[in-house]
Image (cartoon, rainbow, N blue to C red):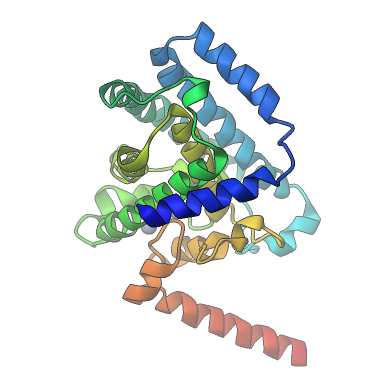
Length: 289
Ligand SMILES: [Zn+2]
Ligand SMILES: [Zn+2]
């Protein structure tokens, strides 16, 4: 706790020297308008649904456009297998079902959670951005461990065909595949999302900040493209698109959602490392020809 406090104090001092964020004014005005005109129930349920839908399709958009750009194909990981319209429509149908019939009821649950624990919605109680960043990072670490364990269990041959097989329908993933899953998987792996919230949520804004970060991460790892200068790769131990693409191609190994440490620790990334070595040797031989 003491260390946390000293980190927060240091960051606060550094933040004083940073230029003002030009978006903070409009953000404050919008947030105050929202809390003045809508009830907490409306914000937690319909508000969360709108935030989730807008972010989901917005973050999927670049990857969706890449399939029509010939010069982007050199960044596609499994570039011998293009996306099909039928596959994308099928994915859309399943994710819309999951969003409205599984995730929306869960969002109603988050409203009751905020009431039960007295989580504030007002602008003045909002934590500063650096505290929010730490809380979201904490959520990502917790979710990643949950995801590793439950995902690995779902791959057990006794259970695989009943639930997780649905997500593996796409051996060559694209962004929207991120939430293409059996309803049971949506609830089971989705629990990992709420564990971080249960542990360290201090404001409604954290819920949406964590939704945004989790969507950026999961859509990126399913995008199928390893685009250069991706800022997410600045995060230490971040797995990325190649790491999870291999999981869809190979069906085993690389079970984590965000970081690579659990797969490294338990050796479940060995097949991926061997594959990378094989591809690097092939690439080297091609250059020598
Ligand atoms: Zn899997
Ligand atoms: Zn996946």
